[in-house]
Image (tube, rainbow, N blue to C red):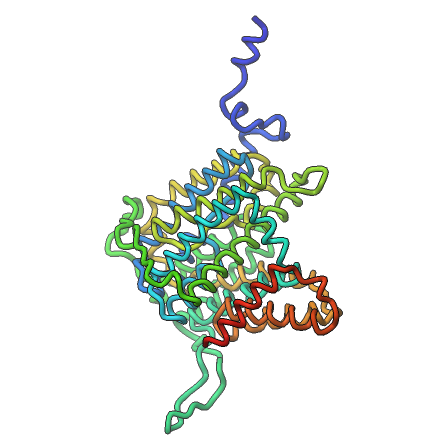
Length: 452
C-alpha cells in the first residue's frame, strides 16, 4: 500500500521531467522558461524584418517564426528534456535574405528549398552521428571567427537598416563614383535618431542586467517612435487577434536550381553556420549550468541536435530560415532552469505570442536595430579565444571576420577563411592540422572562384 501511495504522490511534471533528480522545482523551471523567452522574443520582430527584405509577407513570417520556435522548443522539452529554446537563427536569416536572394539573385522560394534540404540532411546526419564528425573537422579558430564575423555583419545590418549609417558613394559623371563606402546618416531626426535612442535605452538595460533587456528596449523604442512619427499605429488598436495566415509562404519550394554549384555552396553555408551555432550553444550553456558529464560531453546531445534538425525542416515548410538553439537559453539556465520544463514554458510563451501579432507587426525597423546591433556584440565574445600570435590561425580568422561585413556576404567570409587556412598551414609544413574533409571543402571553394 505504501508503494502505491508513493507512486500516486508523484506529480505529472516530476514524472515527465525528473525535477528532483535535477535539483529543481516546477516554479523555478517555469520562471526560467519565461526569462528565456523574454531574452529572445526580439526574434519575433527581427526575423520577419530581415526576411521580408526578400519580398516575403511580413505577417506570415511572424507566424512562421513563432510557430517554428514553438515546435522546435517543444521537441527539445519533451524529447531531450533539456532547458534550451530554439528559434530561427540570427546570421542564417541574414545570409538567406541578403546573400542568397538579394546578392545572388535567387528567389526566396529557392532559398527556402535549400533550408528544407539542410533540415533533411541534418536529420540524416544526426541519426548516423555524422554531425559531430563534420564539426570536428573544421578548425576551432575558424568556428570562433565565423561567430565574430556574423556578429559584425548583423550589427552592420542594424546600423544600415535604421539609417544610422548610409552609403557615402555618389555619382560624379561618366558612371564614376566618389566619396566613401559608408558614412554617418541622418541621426538628428527620424529613424536614425530613434535607433540611437533605442540603442542607449537597451544598452542601459543590459548594463543593469534587466531580464528581457532586448525585448524591453524594442517595445520602449517603439513607444517613443509614436510621437516622432516613426512608429505607425494600426488602424485598429486591437492587439489580440488570430495569427496572420501562413498561406503566402507555406510549402513554397523551388527545386529547379538545387544542383547548381552556387546552391551547393549555399547549402553548405547553411549547414556550416547552423552546426556551429547549435553545438557551440549546447556546450556553452551546458558548461554554465554544470550539466556536462564526467567526460565533458553534453548530455543527450543527439536528442538536442534532432530538435534543431526537426525545427529547421518544419520551419522551411512553413516559410522561415534555419532554426537553431539560442544562446539566450543561458539566461533561463542562470535563473535555475535545468530540465525540459524550462523549454516547455518558453514554448508556451511563443504560443501566446502567436495571438499578439498586431503588437509585434507595428514595431518599426528603427526599434529592432538596437537589438541587431547588440546581438552582434553578443556574438563577438569568441574573438578573445583566437590566438592572434599564431599567424597561421590569426590570418584566416581575421580574413573571415573582416570579409563578412565588408562584402555583405557570410559565405565569402567563410570561403576566404578556409582557403587561407589551408594555404598557410601547407606552406608552413603544418598540414597535419588539416583534416581531409577540409581539403575537400577548400577544393569546392576554389572551384566556385574559378567558375565565377
